Image (cartoon, rainbow, N blue to C red; front, side, top):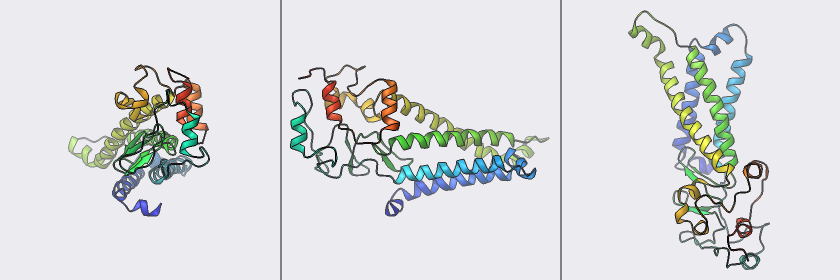
Length: 267
């Protein structure tokens, strides 16, 4: 984990962390609600805001450094005894054969994809996120969404705090001098808020239909989805079950079996 931190993603992670704390300091130094609470000796809100910022940073590093579900061998221990045993359990007439990756030469489970950036195959691959410099896959996808939710709460709160600190002046020049750093922080927070809202909304929608970004964007090129109509998804169990399985069931899923049960040509 420590070695991962100092690879190519170190600059991205350091920039994100530095920007987060610079904005936090700016909010405390200006005459915002946080500063006024401190001056009155009311430390509950400033402490809660700092805890939320710390939680968002910790979740960022957890998702960034976590194994997203790399395919390590041809056999997934605890789920299948061997490739032959698994393939004998699944009728091949209704389920595409497991394909072997042309890059790492490992046999890919269904819904896995090779990431060109990480140079590894990832189970239930969603996308490679340059923001966290890591793939989003089976093992860290739920934590990625939790991180987005916490980050959104911190950003919206920071947006409110920044607006509370905007002061008035007799001239535009004096106004910009007095509020320059706060306006810059406000602009950054506003941009990130829009990005996080869009990301969170998209991912919650995809989770609710049990799809991934890769499957949604490249459906026409994915062999196991070609036999289904555009509005059909062999992994969809309904919104409630999809959300429950995604957030509450922490186990490796044999998607080949799920696919076989919902195949349009069951055997």
